Amino acid sequence: MIRHPLRNGFKLLGILALAGALALVVASCSRDRVAPTAPAGTSRVTRADRPLSISNPADVALVMRKQEEHTARLMAVPGVIGTGTASTWDGRPEILVLTQREGVAGLPAQLDGIAVETRFVGEVTAYATLQCGTSTGNDKECAAGTIGCVVLKGGTKYFLSNNHVFARQNAAKTGERIDAPGRYDAKPQCAQTAICASLTSFKTISFSSSNTIDAAIAKPDPSRPYTVAEACGYTPSSTVATAFVGQAVKKCGRTSGLTTGTVQAINVTIQVQYTGGVATFTSQIMTPGNFIRSGDSGSLMVEQSTNKPVGLCFAGGSGGSFSNPISSVLSYFGATVASQ
Image 1: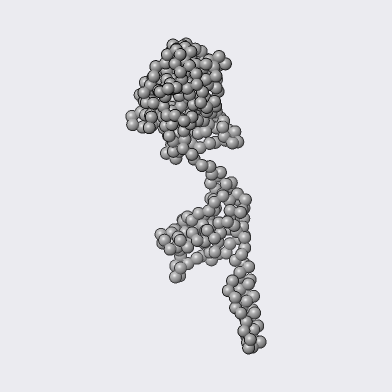
Image 2: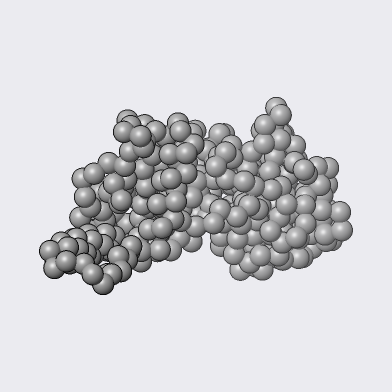
């Protein structure tokens, strides 16, 4: 506030006039100190008798300074999580208030004559680089499986997992949203999570004839950065290996993380219980029962020493875990495992 020191020798009339002016200044200052939740004035900031313009760098800089001046007080309002400088519908720079929930009350329409827009953005979380071997699922169900790996098909990359993880056991349509993590892992549980891909293709599971694979691919969403590396610290090779009894293998899964084991049997025929019925699979690979757990479906099994893909994990019981031969999976989609 500007101070006007009194000087000796003023006439009484001058003193009274000055006192009145000071009272007006004090009243004005107190009005300017209204908390951010108070109703704003109706004046519009102008420069040289013209409205501010979002296309004028000096005007934008002015509004940014005003935004920064008020940010701390605005963010002290419960539900406010951020501010910014944006543009009104008619091209004037404005202060943007970002809220975690809808209906945050008491926010101003203007600050220092600058328009204020309140915009709901929800809870903002860091989108870390998405890794394989982590939770995923179809947005239309509260479930969670595992992103097995990234495959390359016709020059385009896709995430690989099971039909029953990405395609809801045959019920899905191509284009459906795939999330990461799966909604079963959301907080609160079953709430919608961030999109990671869209369903591209899947092999239908037959409940009347034999199957070889339970697999699906989904095209990554451009909003989510991802890597071909597994969350457990290794990257699958693009060269596949054929399973053999005694082969040392490992996998990285959503539930049990990194596990190791050996192939116990090959050319396995096994009946698998789904919610839609019992499906028979042939030419499968068997590993110990603790190799995968519920939620690890879709994990990529690789050789321990070479990281060469061997199988796509999909089912298990207390005494055995089962995987599709990865060569059969890749052949169906006309794809290869992406190693970079």
